[in-house]
Image (tube, rainbow, N blue to C red):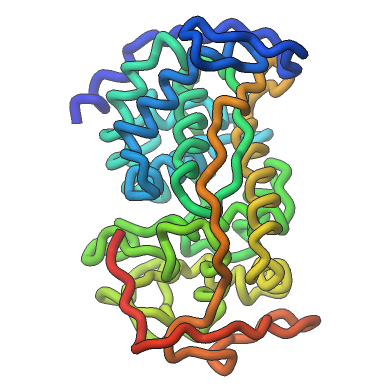
Length: 356
């Protein structure tokens, strides 16, 4: 925990800001290997390779899931009325405050792992840039994920985020939509952002089963998440009865109450269903919404477009299915204007998904 005790006293060097529109001619980087649309982005290639190889270890694993969650929890710490710096890195620098917020339970784990890398590259990136960069890179080894844009030049954080800005899994649909709506996100964008749960899981909703995924394919960024949550819940993988959790349809997975209700609420049920087996829609809308989130609280006109430093994520050619022994009869139909898609059922015995 030494990282948490000492980080707030550190000074960070912020890159020179030139603007979002890159020059027309690509710049050859000093290493003689890479080139970038903007020469200011050249320093990011060494950071990128270090994170992919040594933090994420070229896997769509636990550190990748944690870094993506950290991106969200840092960025959503902004409200046009009560303040907050948004995507500014405050969750790392002022962690003694922000980690006390109930919705940030478990964030300390990824901060402990990511912290030494943040310090290592403090001369290249501000905390806000680093957290957003790591979050975008976390998707590179998740098959099916989109390539998400990245902009650099966020100033250092000035203060901790105000409390109660990060949604909880037990919040109602109106509360969640209102929170995101206050920072400019539509219900469609909210559901699109939840695509991240395709490669995510929970450590603290049920502490007896840490690392429990939210869908049956947690190493793949696919639309299976939107199928699994729409299936009728029949079981708890762990103890059950935990705040923010409802019954799941698949042993080894955990279903958040907020996901369950968003899939069934009239404000979002048809949006939810529209992502089922529509990989391109999921990629396009999630990528745009995630980049939009990375700009919360920031002056986008002063940022440098460094998107060409982000590699193309691994491809995915599969499709959504009903889990073994389940079928269309197990779907809890919610959308009133169109039927849930017909999907094939995977062969085999009932599925048991291992922890991440």
